[in-house]
Image (cartoon, rainbow, N blue to C red):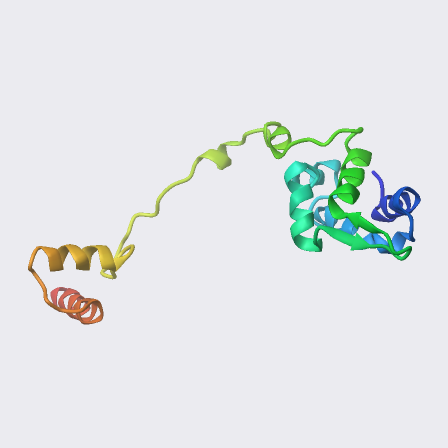
Length: 153
């Protein structure tokens, strides 16, 4: 696994300037090593979408110490190619290889328990207004509803 410094040195050889011109970009691509120090950390940013995200973070170009404007995407492409055997995978290439686990697919909706309004109270209020069951504004309707709930408990 290459260190970001090695990528930065490679960028300086390829585009001119010095490694420190490129260090922050290569550090950004490898920041996910903080969470997982295995090559699979690359699934976070080492793909085509990651290249465009790098542009959003660092801008479209950087001016190196030699005065040359270098597209950030070129720097990112160099990094990804060096780490991914010469190719730039898509995010889907990485995600398709995730081994599904049961905890990933067992989402659930928490059932509402209690007297507080659940979800967006404006929906219930609007239907009450439309049905002619209240003339109150939303804030007053919510206060009246809370009072009714407290009294019935």
